[in-house]
Length: 446
Ligand code: PA5
Image (cartoon, rainbow, N blue to C red):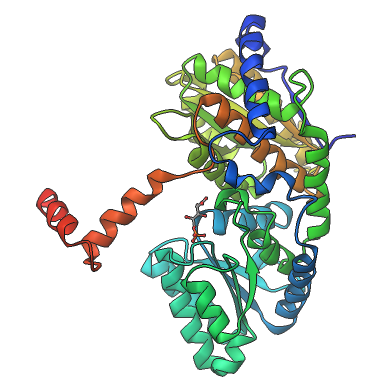
């Protein structure tokens, strides 16, 4: 039985059979484009077969390196930005906890750096690292991204001071291009152990490569089960059956709502452990579809927390959105609500009830309320928070994203828009070669 289901009950009043028929044709054609590898960005399709066709020798090296890191440090600092960090952080927090670093455990803390240019964020992490044994996994496909490059300078210098150049070599692990880039060259020169971001896998599709797998393994998660889940998804979802295939059906609904004029999709979860998964999903869909003046804005919430903030807008504000709710069937935790003799809050009718049951009723009540407010809701039902289910979910979202992007008529595998801020930033910072641009920008800022 599949670990992920798509429940369409809460969209059926918002979509006609004619709309489904019309989009089905486009979805089949988009899937064929992906399958035949004939579409834009077809040199970035390595992720499609990755769950079965991955480098087994490297996979074993990742497991060995993870054991070495576990034994030799209190903290693993993972340096990377965008696709080079979101997947690992999403999986660790979803499976373990957003409070993973504060929990009792026999694996190292995992902190993420180089995903911001904030001086305070870097200083705070350095102070957390004081007196601790540290390893570093720097991840950058290009090897030249500013944010991780700055953080790597800082942590490399810290490690070299603390352990010497030789000692630091044993503690620095680099995930980058197999042959190109300054990071690769420097790693070869210094003798760091390196792992590969395959040429044909873009950053936001790279969670099942060494990019995600090494930090995930260090956190004590079974990466074989993660790959097995993704392989199961590939087996079940790589087909053009629009009547059964949940990845294609998810892509269908996204495109129907877009054509209806919706402007945003909100990914909803009732478990705080999904907050970083939401961020991973936002990058995946935002960078893949948001181009050529097209695309749904991907947004996310954690309910019931955000029912007390954005909930008002979703219920009653501009009707610009639909929701995709990720429900975890077996949350893995039992917790009964205690009785209170004084019944101060009047909640004794819930004494002894499971908190997860209450959470699920909050979800069902909200689904109906948001439907009444005119918001369609897709319901994704994930069996549990185990690695296998998570691997399945990741692949599901990647496949649906590619098909949805082709249906929208964009290249889902490039991200030209990301360059604009970099160009301006380098010009303002006075990078050699950007002199003319600097003059233009400085005038505009006066
Ligand atoms: O999805 C992408 O390609 C981007 O988000 C990149 O992952 C991000 O910009 C980091 O790039 P790099 O790994 O080259 O440092």
